[in-house]
Image (cartoon, rainbow, N blue to C red; front, top):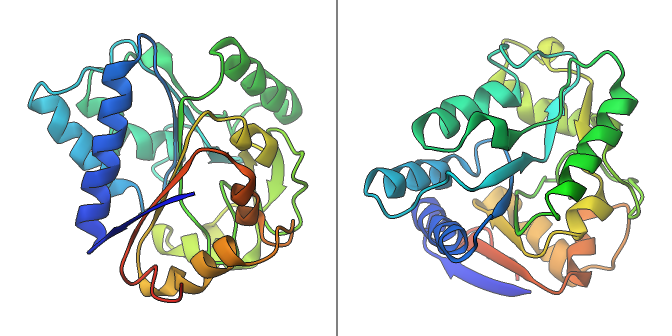
Length: 241
């Protein structure tokens, strides 16, 4: 695992953007795995800035998001489809038919999981997968106890995860209890993983991910087994290493 130490969130976002832009510019048909939440927002703004400076074009890029809440349509402002449109997609030249997220409002959720795996298979899998790190070690919405050989599946969200995400909703009661997420095995098939972590509250999770035992009780620990991981983290997040 390559560890890139930066001063703060802004520098983390800039370095992450540089890596993404370099990858997009170096491949004929790049496939990006994207994440939501507060951690990648700065990176997305930097990607928009790079696009506006004509440093990169996304017309031949395909994207797959890690996850989506069950029960929320793409028009719901709390959905991850809405988030991605608002924070990135509508500001760049990525074609609409190349931007994929699980459909959390699908009638047959199990079929939706299978179909999403098929789409990634046809795209020949992900060149760079962006990840954040949950306080409990979750990656995507793969909570503690998720099998390392899991594929895209429906998950019951841990209470700590729902509480962490409640700031985006009117109340905790409004946070969905289930989500569709890429499985851990699916994530591990990405050719490169870009892990972004910022803030002192994530320091213990970073330490456990790197120095702890590999265990399904701390899903991010599996990243020790991936051959191409770049962790970009600020000083606070690395303070317990």
